[in-house]
Image 1 (cartoon, helix red, strand yellow):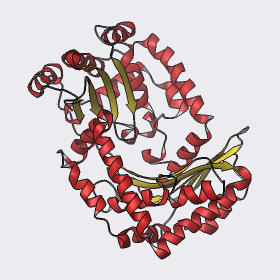
Image 2: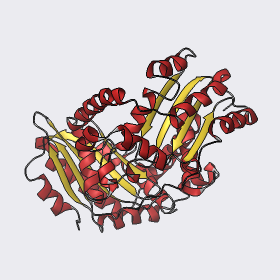
Image 3: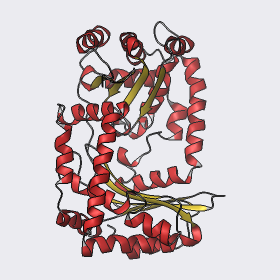
Length: 404
């Protein structure tokens, strides 16, 4: 991206909540927090100052299938950013006193999640999709008891086991001089033990209904979904287009009917969340408790209409163009490009031609989209409910959709 004045550098590690046992659930997220609290040569304050004196922003995130560390600043400082991030990733010291302080910070973050109807509904949805035993059914942030228990030795052991070179991608986007960047990465990361690939067991789709009522909440958060093919299965592109057809934009059937015509929700959306080992076709909305039953009825009607009648020409053309614009915008966003590249390397071992994926998406036929809805409605659904959940809403869901 030579036209940029700034550069984005990220280090992706193929380890996340999917790679955790129940005893270690949440440790990837704790490690991500604690990596900034000190290394063998720098304390927390020095880490922050070394980045900010260059005007750079440093951040990190943990997801189901990876952990990532990021820095963004002036392009001229890229070769300084590489050893800075390498020190954080490769040499965390996990000071015991810092762990006790950061433990409280993470518990505050967990409390915010536990009080958020949308967050608890999505956690309930994941449990409904994959059950409680598989890591895919557990929240990325982890379990309270684990967060309260993790020791410095737990963190050091996890990093030693998971942070091997074969599980790491270092990527930069911007006006990068490739040879100089490669030399800097080799100098900073070249001594990393190779390790073994971090593998996780693909979850089985369970389906069902999970709910979490929150006192004081005035809205019912609804998350409804179905299984989609995983990233390595080319059939997933039809599900991506089907999701855009149903709920991308204000003129989509979902937004037009649920919000514009019936006033059942301020926000509603439909997406296909496709991962290397699994995928979810997700419909979400927040509505008043007294309107939740009507919302369910209308969503079921919209799904059935797509399965029975198939997409209309105008709607499908809209969805295709929206996906094309989303794809091109993603190419203009450094963070999107870096994460997509890392996922390609972790999943396929190479960077494929991105345009081929867009071409497959635009080539999906109307009948393929109709079959997506037909097959979804014939298989077990998953429903997550949070906030002010009406007593009979789960029973209504069982009447509307198929469950295992």
